Length: 287
Image 1 (cartoon, rainbow, N blue to C red):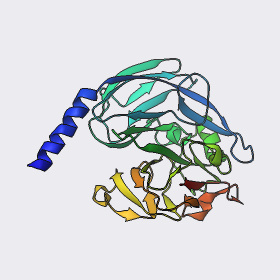
Image 2 (image 1 turned 180 degrees about the horizontal axis):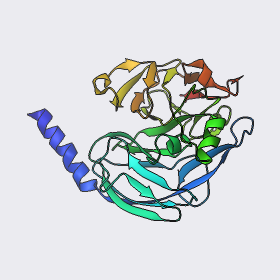
Image 3 (image 1 turned 90 degrees about the vertical axis):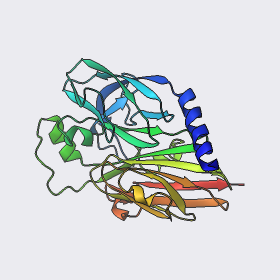
Image 4 (image 1 turned 90 degrees about the horizontal axis):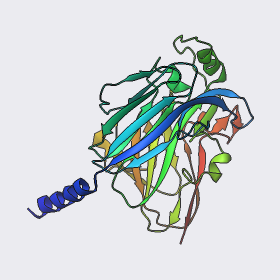
């Protein structure tokens, strides 16, 4: 009975706090100059008309609703949908220069991917996929939006070639649109904290291949897995995450120091063949 009462209290608090949040996003196109300035064609959902490779990160509480306004700032048609969430009236196709408005409720804890569903997976692979974290946590949260990039394929898509992927062999690998060493200057993804803190890492894979994130120095606990709900509460140091899947993990550091965290597929820790210019980070824990 005590357990039931505690749960009821929690849900009552969530209900009181639930609100409608307004999010206005623009679908912009540009180029990504990862590592050695390859000028890869790129598309992203940004919070303004100014292009950046980082897709907007949305963090809301359980029970909240997002009132989306999505503008297509490109000369091509694009789409909008959310993985594992019912979007009323969706998925949407947005013509050049047009916009859509839609309210989407989020009733469950977790991490979700909003993305360009038009000509899937081609436009999504250009970069147009971002993160929605649904949680009532007060802990520090770090976000990893993982993608890989293939310039010839991206270029072909922008030229109207939507052939299926053949011999997919990307050269560039990013977290939040950048690669190491630029990742080290990204406060959104660089995991920092004190011994004994609870640190939340929200990981989404919006690329085309599985990425397996490996932590040195610490184990972490899965609190949400879109692909394998049965894995919740497992404590591990390596977390495989498939294409268009998401995961939330809790890390409680037990010692100070600097420790690597990276893709266990070592190809993905490189950029154009240069190690470690890929999915690579340093965890920094102090007293």
